[in-house]
Image (cartoon, rainbow, N blue to C red; front, side):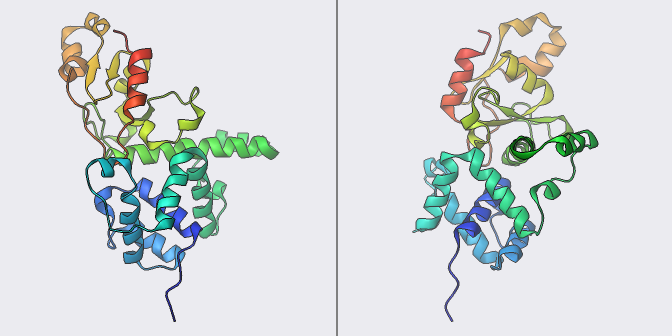
Length: 259
């Protein structure tokens, strides 16, 4: 009896996992790989193999000259492009699908919401409820993907306490609907550096160099050096995959940075 062919749903779930674990974890011993393999009836080795296939489509790894396995296959190429063309919808749909494979609804999968959130959810009906759920899931998903991509450390100072880290959008969530879940639109920053970046006191150039606004020099010298100026003209700590999009960084730098 021949091996069962991979379905589109299975490829979607592998792509979902690809966004959530580090590049060096694409192996058959990783607990998340094992869990997904059990869900879809594949071996951990087969799932790990497909993760490496997908890495050959990642622009970051292509730019590094790492091609992954030869002949990744039509399905791997097509599913990566589907996500790349519509991160917002494809990531959400893959998360709904993952919940389904666990015999749960998406609401049950994200059961850690605060009571106030659940009260709001219960009051919603029809499309409004669906839109609210999708927004909350996407926000949670973007944070998980971004923090994982930067090894749960601030890209500027290296702080690695999860509660003090923010999944920061380069292009604002409210103004760029098409890029909301794009991993290349994410930076993992400490709370203080996230706010400084949002307000333009910190900028990052398209070649990943940190710039500190002279307006911050008005704070005490000790604070200025400890929190900001020591990072001037340093390169950000680069992520594991999904490098921040240089065009997005340039746009933020030109429009927001306080020169």
